[in-house]
Length: 108
Image 1 (cartoon, rainbow, N blue to C red):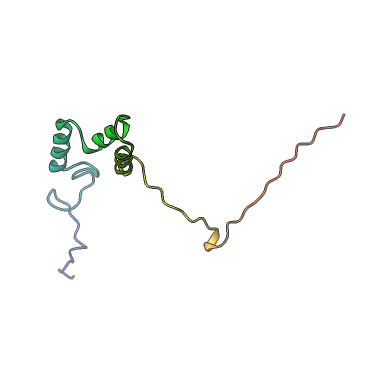
Image 2: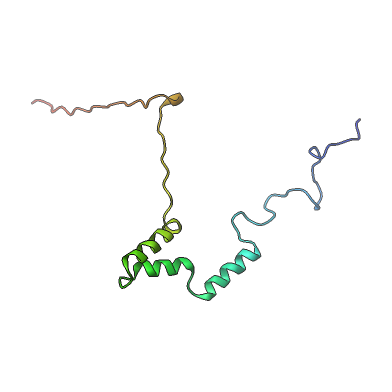
């Protein structure tokens, strides 16, 4: 019997160490620093994005300044679209099947 066990072969059976289902911070939850920054920004009032949107919507501002604010705010408000190539099986052409449906009246 070989008394040497590699680290990958060890399995945790106790309460110490090792991965346990459901343990740890949940994915996407902010850490303390991020949560504090978000709270400070919210408490300060206007965020930079809020300011840009306010300038963009202000009809008394000059058009160039409004356009600049809109361009700066757009990436934070709208997802950037990407092109997608469509191809058929194994990169070949797309196969198109036409289905024709005929409705025939019954003769009396």
